[in-house]
Length: 308
Length: 179
Image 1 (cartoon, rainbow over the protein chains, first blue to last red):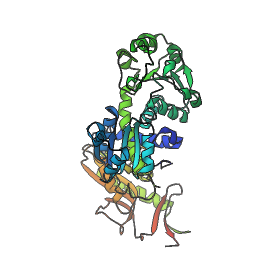
Image 2 (cartoon, chains in turn cyan, yellow):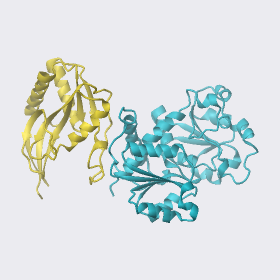
Image 3 (cartoon, chains in turn green, brown):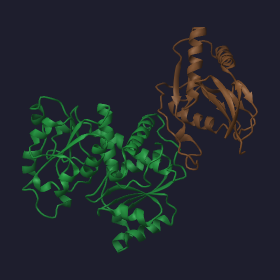
Image 4 (tube, each protein chain N blue to C red):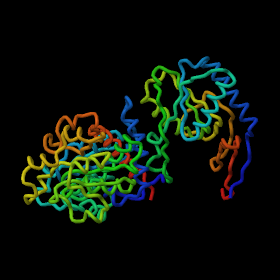
């Protein structure tokens, strides 16, 4: 199990448990390396990586860029806001033009689900999906499970509830796949208008009551309400959502146990989480960010050394 | 089908480990300003044997030591045909201003040692770096690196493999009949 079974990182759906374990073991070493005084290794010095972001991103883009630079790869960045995409160029043309500049790996975020799968079938470079619409965000799910493993020693047997906008969340879908593959029990909680129809096929527990969900779980992974993806009104208001599904200190204090709070960011403070919860000792939100760099280094490294 | 011949048996190996330990004492005395760093995977076993020899026979205990993983620093990472296995990094030490003794079982092309020198630098600026190996394949060097402490010098051709079997305590030369 020293080789990934996949040539691209398109989604957790395509990985097996050995792949995830290998990524975690490699990330353990990279986490040690990024905490050394000298954080850079020469591993990917012959590799060129293009970060193509057709959708806004702050932490994922920074995290990937930092991971690439820590691995000594050459990095080029592309953002659709200032590109020829605005002039009507197709995705395939844009990417083929970039590939003509001899790029080895493409890290892509795109608003359309399946964009990275489409790309992987049509071009020769290795593709890393950095989020494709409402579909998958594999590196986020890997870093979330890695953070749970770091906190509890293992993921298997733990109860994780994902709270919020499951319908529009690629983080939720990737997390469900990843946690289930690692043997965790997964629950989801949120308004029924924000729950996907295919939920039953994923084998997750559904909670409509926040309190019941929090009492059940060891870890609560809290998601942001993605207003930008909602073309119809699915919530009366953010204020009402916050009243029913927002987590504050009072809600946590009412539980007879302590649970771990996670959030993939960006946090809407006062909506899904209050500041005293987000900044509390039970929150591992900043650990997630740190682990994100190690996980992305591991993914890029393992894809680069993959032998076919 | 492999042909093999033993070049060191367990008694010889024991004598060599004791001699290498004594050579280290000559140079490092009580090891108060020295650290032993092994190159994983196989250097770890030799380092363990030397550390326990120093403790059992010469009463030198609590030597700072660590195990490096050099995978990320290798120059053949992207070109090697078989996947490179990463080992767990065990370096809870600083090498800053310390005399570092790198330990590996077989010195062949010396590319691993070059990578190890890069890998050790992030843990501080060593006062010096020395190299101890059990077997020196002196005719196979790609890089001008020489060991400071050598167990045995072996002249083997490229198609032969020198293997240290730490379970049976012997060193073998394996030759592929097809070669």
